[in-house]
Image (cartoon, rainbow, N blue to C red; front, side, top):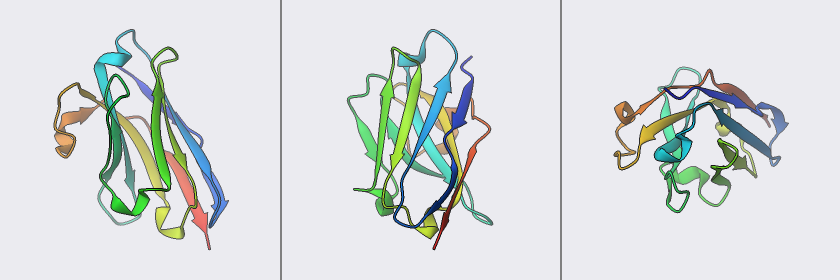
Length: 125
């Protein structure tokens, strides 16, 4: 069982940057794909981006973040990151990381599990 802890959220002005981290326990981190999700107030949680276990394949489900957000991972440190640049007020949400078995369908939210507690990102205008 993988346990995940997110960090790096905070309050930032529009146009600013934040880097979120997802630290994982366990020795099989590289066998899991990682997804970053976000949930804005009053809305459902949605996939933002995902990365394969090897780190060679990435997918940005939310077109609004393409070119602004970058997902990465370091399997030697059991961590995944989400670099967020040019932040906008509409990026305000709680951000979660979760894992999926390699080969899972990333657009199927039920493929992901072991959710972290989330980290709040607030972007002021």
